[in-house]
Image (tube, rainbow, N blue to C red; front, side, top):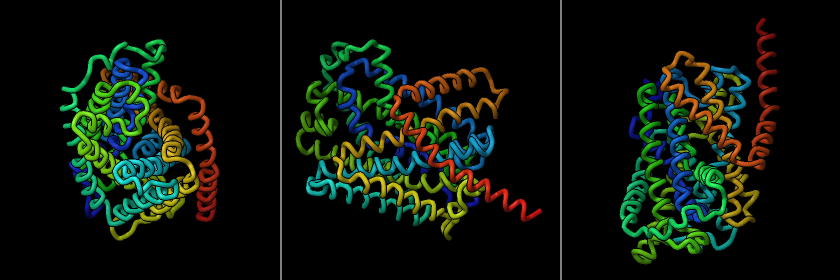
Length: 433
């Protein structure tokens, strides 16, 4: 049992996983997938399969290693403090930069149903900042309050999304999927491009493994939440995006800023389009709530182990690592504010690039850590791990040189902090001896 007085239960954790995966991507991805036609289904299948294999590896590790911190805990256990810090730092940057991206996506969704809210770049940035700090206040109220919010917002977006996907199947036009591969690229190139685009939609599969210190019975709860949440969110996302591709003409789909809302409007009228816009707004807010909760828990374990500065481990009376929470939200706010003169689309693209570059390394190291921690695993698990490793490497390479460069810059930025923490630890040891 967790030592938190108000732990997260099974349903709250499943809701967090689903809510963190289903955010902004499902509502904008169909437009990006338009040039690939039916061939996009191959990319979706590959991404979903790879994400499920990664989720399985995370689930197995959560049964072996109970301590919180997710990928950081696994990397440190397998490879020591140095690799542990690199993973913790990389994942932390991923989380708070993702929060900036999701907050911007929230502002864009709100603007689709209330244009005055984002009529200027400054108003759009203020909307994003407002959503970010509302979610920060919810997390400051306690992890259970954030968990309850996750259940409500997840239901409010998951149910309409599934209903839309199932009803929309009846309005899919076969002509939308011909020719099979309209991009003109070789099929392997098309599949790689689609999988790279859909990667953003699956970030968050590891959510349940991070806050295990505030989870009830984590060795049972965390694996279930990881697999159940990933499966539900992955299938719902794939269904909805594929249906939208089949409902709209390619030229309309490619140029639409809100393709799902456009599809609903064309088939069921203006009210349906507005309704999808509301669902998208709720979806982004729910994802932001889950990721804000995660950003404080991400640094807690590393700070308790002396690899992050001590203030990140300071808890309030509700058990919330409030300093880490506030610092993370301040950094996300700075990222939004420093780029507010960009359009929302440009700002969203920039922050996605930053977040994706930072999250791929923890995925890759986690699979390698499993190989070292559980060398006597059954051959079936080894096959799954080989698939997860191949997918992680392929995704890392597929993000392109720019993303890899950003990743290198981010890692270098954290290195002085690691050196300082090691120096402080050495000085403390010398004083004690």
